[in-house]
Length: 284
Image (cartoon, rainbow, N blue to C red; front, side, top):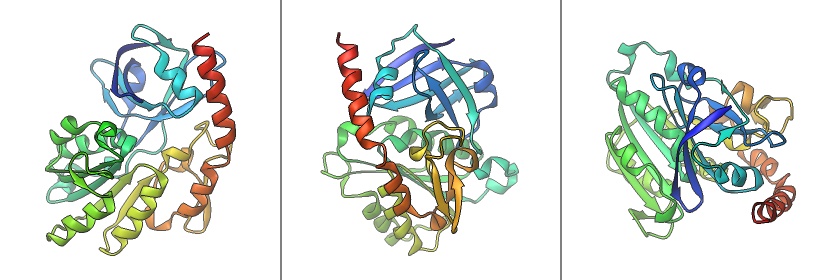
């Protein structure tokens, strides 16, 4: 059993939890994910590792309430335990394999959309610790859905905030911010985008204009996290790949985003029905 030692709602629908998992924390690296089950008969849920403390044996996860299983996770309290927690899974970010001297003089741009800010954080934190220069764009629909502003600001060189409605930062989409900072003469060796699939698609189209290598994380398409269910199949460079076992990170310019977005809609009706039953069960 894996005890929840800290629980905090970052927004009304986004919950952060620190969980005791010493072996997982000792092996975790940026870009990887884990699988949790809230209860014995619960669904297996893949969640990107948001942070980890190897000395304390703690891993941090961030969950947004979007359906039945995420609602059950966020319903747990400090002192409660997850029935299962497995990981780390997935292939770590490519730069984890670099030698320390490679980071000197490198400049990265990270584009985080909504909940995607959580998995961006450990990557930026890692690069900062290696001496690389990192700029970060965080975008959300409104100020109430922005997370990790303070934490991100402490580990990046420049933090840009934008909201669709203009309630905080610059009004507009992350793609508008990309155009703005590139027009100011910024250049980057590599960029990473993590967030909703549609955001990553249009970020890819925008970054392509500037000829900057771009990586995206397809964690949002994963279901069981082992490759057995086949739900995370995606076409990359004309070949079928499995996001959970061959990713979750891929070359953005090779991903068929339209296919990936269609796949995400396949289970929508079932998710709505399951969430309705979950709400009833939690309030009985």
